[in-house]
Length: 358
Image (cartoon, rainbow, N blue to C red; front, side, top):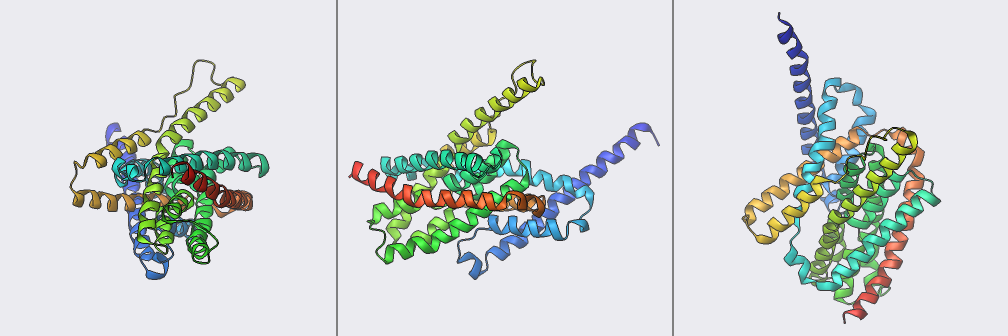
């Protein structure tokens, strides 16, 4: 056997192992999707993404030894590269026309809540709860922007460890699900004195996941649901500028750390600009121009949800419970403080904006 042919065998075997790993994650995600469609799970507004990371973590910690080591590359591909592609295609769910429907009021509410929650979450997480920067940012992003999808996007930009994303997603699940029951109950009990516009602004501006927003607002009125969904998608749109700012900040922090350690004296580091965020923005424009048939957009969105489910499942598989235990209670406490801010601060912002644009 020649040297060239013998060298190609390990490469071929590695590629086969990676493909097998991707196929394994895809089959796992297909099972997760069916599980998430069960009435008692779907009724709680829990998306396949959430079920995926939980099921993946259970497998990764209890049954991981049964998976061939060569498949790990495929799992990592799904949790990293496929993730970036899927986040970019999330842009087809947003259009500029929808955002314009709620006007400046929806934009102002979204902007204030996103920025304030990110700042408060990062400060509380790092200074009060003594979390590392990545865990604090991921937890804040999940609360501020769009739940698990934001955690995925930030995880990719920060290049953080999977268990940190798992902790942030846990916060989204807990407090987002609580909102689905608490918000409508508070409205019907007369504790929240909000009209239809106010309810839409408050629900869309402060609830974590898109599905949770729809689930909560649908218990108020169809009009409130429509407004809340658009406000929520306005928050999703803000993922792009926020990621660009975070990319610059992370790059600067790495350069400073490298200079202090003597490891980066030859020049500036590469700017951590998330290309998938630009792809997201480009696809928002594509969706706004209606260049794709509705049937094509629906199909792509369904495939994108599946790809995001694969990414979350793979992240779960790479998560270790022992790592979560170290910062789990502090991450949940950070999420609880942010949740209190979303309710109290979100109401204050909603009332102020309604008066301003009345």
